[in-house]
Image 1 (cartoon, rainbow, N blue to C red):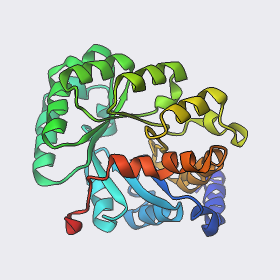
Image 2 (tube, rainbow, N blue to C red):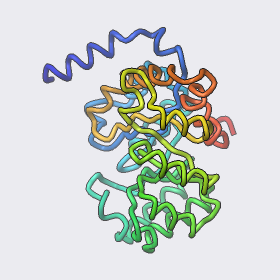
Image 3 (cartoon, one colour):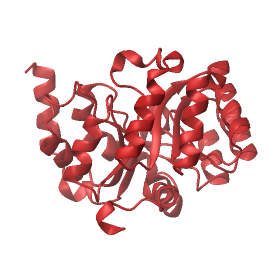
Image 4 (cartoon, rainbow, N blue to C red):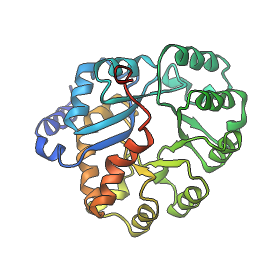
Length: 275
C-alpha cells in the first residue's frame, strides 16, 4: 500500500462518527465495478457507506455483479441501478453494440432495478437503436435514467419518451444558466452534483448556484462518483465535505439536496423483502 493511500485510510478511520451522523446523505452516484472488489471487498464497501452516514446510495457497476453483491448485503441501503456496460472498456462502444440490448433485457428479467445507468451518451448517438431500446426498457420497467449526457442527448431522450425521469449526472459542471433552462423546460429532470468542487469552495456556495438551488429546491442531490477503485477511499471524506457546503444553505434547502430529494425521486423503490 502506498503512503498516500495509507494516509487516506488513516484519515477516514479518524473521521468522527458524530460528524457523519449530523446530516444524512442520499448519495446519487456510486459505482462498484469489477476492478473495485479486491481493493474494497463487499463487506468493507458497505461499512464505508454506513460510516459515511449515507441514508441510501444509488449504486451501479460494470458489470452488474458488483451492484448485486452490495444489494445482497444491504438492501436497506443500496438502491440498484443497471449499467449498460459489462466492463469499463464499453464506455465509448456500447451505443453501437447490439449485444448490450440482450444484456439489459436479461438482467431486467432476472433482477429488480430502480434506475438504468450511469451511461455516457452524447448528441445524435441518443437516437441510435441501442440507446433507443434502453430508453424503452426504462419506460417499461418504470426506471429512472441516470444519464452522463449533454443537452442535445437529453432532448433526444425526451423526444423518445416525454415522461422519462432523468437524473442528469455531473450537471454541476455545466453552466448554471444552461442547467436552469433545462430544469424549467423538463419537470422530470433531476441533477446529481457528483464531486463538483466549486460548490464547496471555502465552504461557500457561489451566488449563481445558490440562486439555482433556491429556484429548484427539489431537483438537486449530491454524489461521490467512485469512478475508480481508489475513489472508495474518499466516500467518508466526500460526505463530510458535502455537509460542509450544504451547511452554507438554509437548513431546509440543505436537507433537500442532502437526502430528501433522493428519497423523493426513489420513493417508489422498496427492497424485495419490504414489498
